[in-house]
Every structure is written in C-alpha cells, then in structure tokens.
Length: 254
Image (spheres, rainbow, N blue to C red):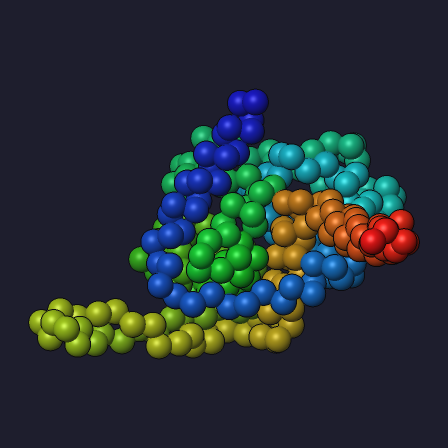
C-alpha cells in the first residue's frame, strides 16, 4: 500500500510541475501504434534501455511482456537487465537519495504515467509524445538540458544520441495589451549536432516508446475493448431476437 501511495504522489508531483506550461498545443500521438505489436515491442526495448535506468515501473512485471508477443527467452536475452527473474517487477537500482541529489527530485514511477498525464489539453500519450521531442540544450541548467513544455525539468535528455542536440530559439515581443511588458515566445528549434536517427525516424521511435507507456498503464485495454465490442454485438442480436419474439407472441392479440 505504501508503494502504491508513493507512486501516486510521485505521479501527482510530475503532473503538477508539468502543468507549468499548458498553453502550448500538444502534438497528436499516432494512436494506431497502441495496437501495433512490432511498435510495442520496440517501445519496450527503448523503455528498458533508456528509461529503466532511473525510472521504475514497480507495478509491471517483465513476464507481462509476453502479452505483446515476446517469449521468456527473448525477455531474458534482451530486456532483463535489472534482475535475473522474468517474474520480477521493473525496478531500478538507483538510490533515491542519489537521485534527489543529482536531479533535484526522485524520478517518478512510470507505470501509470500515460494515464496520469491526461488532461483537457490532450491525452497522456499526446503529452508524453510532445514532451520527449521537446528537449533542447540549456547551459544554465545543471543537466545541460531543458524542455519546452516542462520548463526547468530535472530530467536530462536521455534520447539525445538518437535525436542529436538542438537549441531553442526564443524572441522577446511586447505584450499587445501592455507595451511595457515583454513576452518570451518560442520561435523554433535549431539543430546543433545530428543524431543517429533522422527526425522522422526519431519521431517514430518516440511514438513506439509512448505506445508502450500507454499499453503499460493498462495492459488489458485491448482485451477490454474487444470484450466490450463482443458484448454490444451480443446485446444487439439479443434485442433483435426479443423484438421478433415479442411480435410473434402478440400478433394474434387484438
């Protein structure tokens, strides 16, 4: 119970801090990735290699990855870095005290991050898809990185080798309602160094990672949807049969 409460509080802190810049329009996450097994498998690989070093997923077990088509042997050979048991939860060895000293806060558990970040401004997947593609170089920050939709974020850009290094261009403009007040407006990104992936490849990889995070928050979502569709089809068929039976029973009654 304490672990669940701690995870929820960490997710709440993550959401509260992230709401600092909700005026930005979020990019739309390609929803079809959630049902793409190959995308989910690639997302799981990216999650284990780039996220699981600092962020835990304490309510997800490695053997649950069999639901997206992986075998026990594939999990052991390619994804089982933090532990040696397929039935273990996705935990990290990072000490919370060290994490707080290095990043200013303990990295939140990511099991439910896609669900916790949903808001009127967009879905949790939209937020994560935009967030992971909005890092830029900022020498004033301890990590050397900042984020457009999460200003002064403590997390470094762990995917920078794939995306390359970018700088954010801002312009100062006078407030149309108050000429004495200056506003800070984002103008665009400038590519400083190339990454291992092209921009299109990087966006696709991030979409796979976000699809996995979305799936991890509710692994039975696909089964629930399929079951719901089946129930609706059954009810529609039952309604038709009941309607015809009712007509047959009462046809001779005047």
